[in-house]
Image (cartoon, rainbow, N blue to C red; front, side, top):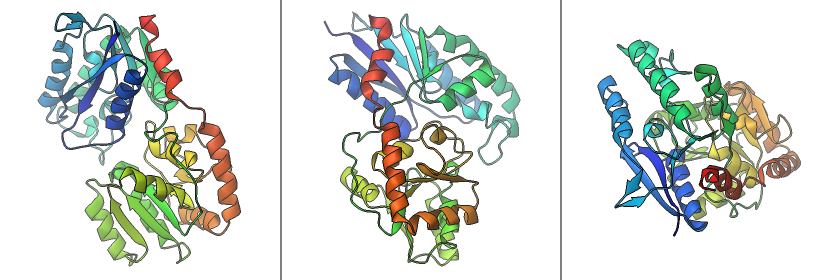
Length: 349
């Protein structure tokens, strides 16, 4: 009989991004390898404080020992608060904790708990839950070393980094190094797409920026583009179908991805697998685990003029683009789902 595995996901209704892709891909990859895998999700709302605690309680109340009279052999927790669920055989592949209680605690732009009424008390409760329930896992992994480091710093709990490939692994390709730089992903303040737009005003006027994705920042970014008079050089693409996304990468001369302390960042891997150099920043977090300065990426401060200098260098030197693209590809080409599944299912053997 096939082993039954539940993959746990916390879903913010009407929001779709890397977290959703990760749990869906993991479930699919488990099925491909002969497991009876099911994605189990609960809606997640982090405000007000009482609602956040209700979400935690809901996960803790779930008993995943069996379903319909049949044993559930393994439960794989991912991001907060899924790992509170009860199971005799629970493994954690940590996407991220509730960062507003930890590294973003004092952040006003990102509504850190230290800036909100009742936030300090809520932080203590979240820390207590994490310190109590994360160690329940028989195996503890995280999606990047950056996430491991946060867990060690704030909770003194050790985890092992376990990297996985992006959704379209095996289908990325390269055609040419054209006249545009591409930015892909949710249009959120943490992704700092605004810095790309500001940088463009200092770039060669022939350079265009194609921005794929939607999100709460889109209107503000469009307004910024208009204020800077860049409407003829910045194109907002919205959600790009898979085939269009792959071609978008294939013909860019570079990829911009400079989020604030990213957990992992699929865009990094998508760029490198498409053999494109990356423009990023020193505080981009997990992004920096895959690239090297002037070998596969140009890394700078999140400042428009510095970003522009690096963008211009790549646009004016397509040979460098190709060399850096090849180096980046070599660095990530062997990241596979086989290794991930082997480790996550180790407690079944």
